[in-house]
Length: 314
Ligand code: SF4
Ligand code: MG
Image 1 (cartoon, rainbow, N blue to C red):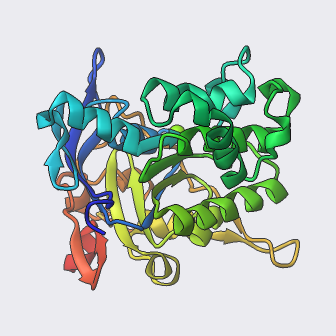
Image 2 (tube, protein in one colour):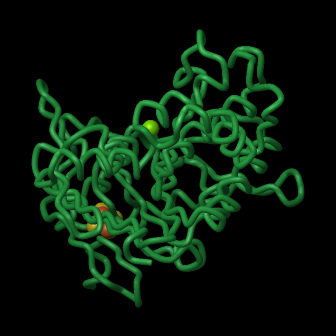
């Protein structure tokens, strides 16, 4: 269904004013229709910035975001509006995204009403439909966000995003603030919605367990660059990049069945003055002379598996 398909291709540099921070540096990422791409990295590595740029919330200072092959900056007002509705973002903290003075019903109806997606006579059915899709009981729609738990509020938030009939969801740490049991429910909800509504996802998370569970493909970010990209089972079974390997190092299991990952040794350097060459070299146990000067380029090391590390040339 190419007309329904979400396709985002971008190559961009995103700069913020004084001091100049290249939050993203020559990032190139394609997301195919129906795919779930997990975007992983330590906090501060640029994941959220990339997610926001792809969702159209921020614009890159250089580079392009393509949607179904169209460059977003060259779109007409109408096309930009369509793109804005088709791509929605779901944040970590649902309370911050929900106006506390509005009831659940008002929150869900606000955008469809503004954008003329349904007539006012259809309001009840429309609101109920999207609340039910998000697993929220419509009988409670006259209440306010603060009257609900974090998990229920996130469902309201999801219903609100769905109510504008998006094709592409950027989930930025969308389950990070929830209890583990609720996390699993919300992740299952995302998966159900993908099938029911033909959705495509960019799933931004620092939680590798969540990303492994939900993603088809995974991109690993380090200081504004994507250092490795591959189908999910490749990344987890045959990680190539030393940073990915460090991220995937586990601590011995204490509780059976529960994986816990070790934090990567050393600190994430400041993006204001990132290390030259391979950004990872100060923390990399395999760093060689050339790593200090030369930026490694992404190369395909197996079908669909890209990695940016000089070791692949040795
Ligand atoms: Fe380590 Fe060099 Fe590879 Fe960077 S390019 S990850 S420093 S070996
Ligand atoms: Mg973030």
